[in-house]
Figure 1 (cartoon, rainbow, N blue to C red):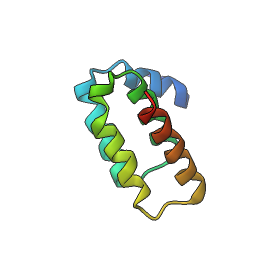
Figure 2 (cartoon, rainbow, N blue to C red):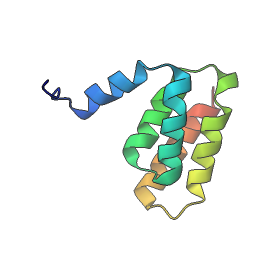
Figure 3 (cartoon, rainbow, N blue to C red):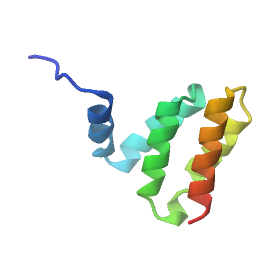
Figure 4 (cartoon, one colour):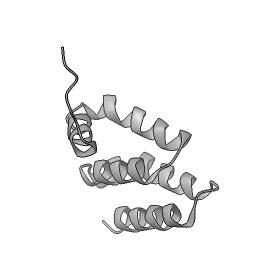
Length: 88
């Protein structure tokens, strides 16, 4: 069978259809391993779909990411996501 020609957005939409208990651990592990603009963006989208009471682990991961040696652009992006998630 042919491999679908998915762009990044298609992959994200596919992953977001998975059950949270399937999707979240892989996303969290990916960020803990190597934080990137893409997986932080995906985490922010994921957290936006949760109730405030369910966001704590994701917020901790964002805070942990700030403790790492990451570039300034990524640091700004993580801070923006943290501000957004904490204001709700």
